[in-house]
Image (cartoon, rainbow, N blue to C red; front, side, top):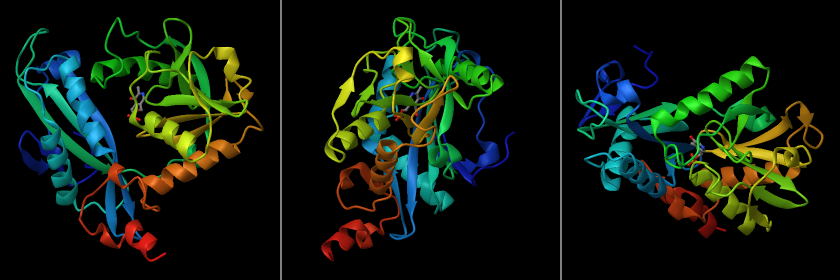
Length: 320
Ligand SMILES: Cc1ncc(COP(=O)(O)O)c(C=O)c1O
């Protein structure tokens, strides 16, 4: 059993102590990876004395999509997913930035073709700001290819998909890098093991399109919108060759877990001067201002957990 990272877990209809959140080894989830999940962030604002869940509605929608694509018999609906997440964060009384994981899985004793019953759990654990966000990371273009959409639905979050990125991560670490970038079956850059990827070249933000065997990332969509609307950048979604990256001025990973993290070196080649560059730093600034509610706009992307948010950015803006 793992060490408790928070007091409680929501598990199949009840809130239970961390140690009791177990599934059986014979479930299709354990045997075949028949499970799907969402990773969500809750950002704690000291100033507002409030936690904000970021883009909860979009996560709930993708959670349903993942279950449908993996042909689950009973689907955990969006309102249930959101209500249980709020309930769990409150039960743990978390007042720090957290990473939330909602998981739906094929429970019971079924064989490979089993489609239910559906189990449903939520965890929420504290997550501090990692060094990769502040200092950047070094990436290796992996010899592992990203699994293609015609092999398995890689645009959704099925647990079984993650062995692909896990092997790329292990290879990168063995070879002295922090993480990996995988190419797709057409040999074009796709994404990292658990995050999307973009680069700055010639003043434009360039990123692989959603038909590049990447996950349909909520952070990617957020960052592209912020780059267009807040930085006034031209955003291009297209195929990217490996060698183009070596000529990029800047690059970054983005995702719920990775937030916006500069890539400072690829395959041993420094990008720019080998330190986080101005465009990515500006993107990070805007991103963190939005998720932490330091600005009043984009409020519909933030779900307050404790209901104390009236004194937050909106009030500050009203007060001028
Ligand atoms: C493979 C993969 N790509 C990209 C992402 C980024 O997706 P999102 O921004 O929705 O978290 C994730 C999850 O964080 C992921 O697991």
